[in-house]
Length: 296
Image (cartoon, rainbow, N blue to C red; front, side):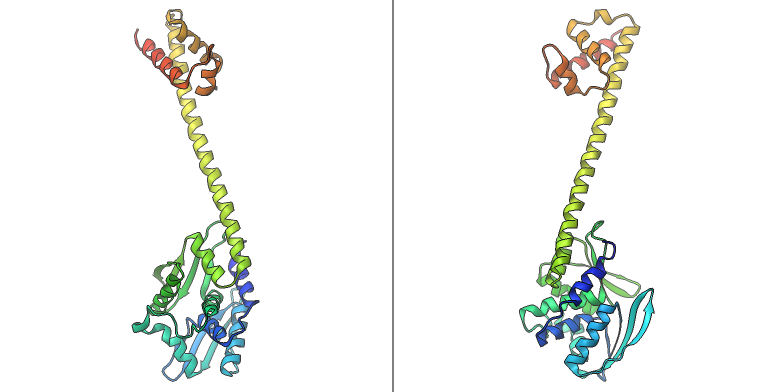
């Protein structure tokens, strides 16, 4: 699922909202990075066929403008520069930068579905998802820091708390937690993509659990191998010194079993005794063997 961004965008573009207020909210998300002039002019660069086509349709339907974007290629993706003139549209977009109303929800949210449409527009225009099979993460690139603050307030109202960072003159809103990424996609109405995210999350968690278990097993194996080597070295030293027959009967039994089963775990070795002994009892015997080996 390497191009998950394209998958989400296609799903959102395939289900455009019907109510006028929701279509206006989606357009606001699409034009969130538009530069607004005091004369009512707007300029924005959009990339991706779904994003461009949706913006053209909404501008034409809502404002009666014959949007004529200048198309160009952008590393194999469609790109377009929009030059528009609409005081109403310019006021709606520039209102997202109003420093006195940063914490307020946008004026164009008129019904419960407007938020969904706005999220859809944002994802179409400025969102970039990581491959969810590797990591749950989405980045929204917003040129205006004031608008980034506005978006942060919108996200926060829905229980999603992005991290704000700046680079190369742009501001990025980063959502790194899986539940936050899933929430944003679901809120945008991309239910199939949200389900795919959840499934990828389950697979990631399963793989991480397997890796943790594997690492734990490797550590245990290494520890067991080290302990066995130390035990065998002490037993070999006692034999070389000719003192093996001087070991007490219980310790001699344990030493013989370890010699015969160098790869056995402590639990397995304890069960081989007649009668079986506990692991703590076996540890105590080896401590006595080490003490015996140290007394020459």
